[in-house]
Length: 346
Image 1: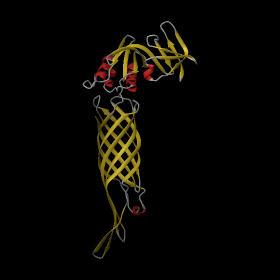
Image 2: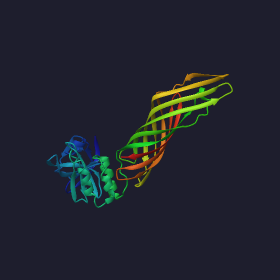
Image 3: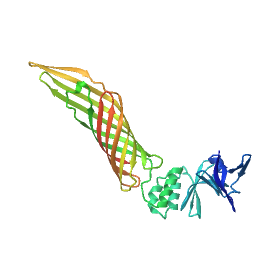
Image 4: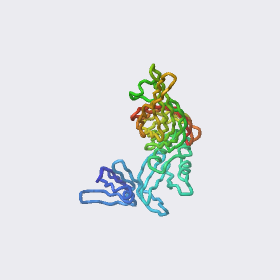
């Protein structure tokens, strides 16, 4: 479909013309100008300096791709002190121009040179040391490179969104809420237990929002007693579970200390569960204990989780964090967890 744009030659520019979007690969090889319904002109990078349509701009450049030299149309992604170009031809390739004078290709990492393009970015942006740490986390893709160049243009030091993982440990308080009628006689209180877990955190579209996924292990024991004139009632439960939160997190883009908030869903799987209600009666010197019922607790429960916390930067890659969260789980017996956690981003 033709879109309105312009075509720039050496001595003249035609505006308001109709340009056909051929897709990224073919756009790099030629510009299709629809002069009229039956007149379609195909222009090469040797004839045209640049052209655009919609929000896309292509500039003719002499480049080398996979050891082959040629002239192609490069898509201009960001323009400023640094200009980022992209071409999809025999793979994906990026090029950077600095101050409209220095032009260089940014090759994807080779197998034995895992930080090649990151080292290049550090060299190109050495006049702004504030982005030196950010260069370590730039991905070889449009969004990540564009975000990095935006940081360089402003020359600001902020955490750069990147994939992280780590370990955490904490203490969890757990309580049954809205208990069934059989437990209404008891004063239900929180039960405490240690929690251990793993997590990973991946940015959403190279932003300060991220998906935070984890798996946490805990083992809780519950014991409640109610003594009446006629009998002594006891509720005893032991639950071992894995909790898997799937959260969306927002982190403030500050350096040394980062405050964050998060919310999302959570799944709990009980791989060991035992919950029984006992009734003891005393008749003279004889005590009779009856296990009156086994309470049903779901193997799998679903719920929601909300939380907040902050992390402290230790190195450019590592940080410590403190997190407070509340989980609510639904099933045959609803449950609320309050969790205080410390952890390490690796």
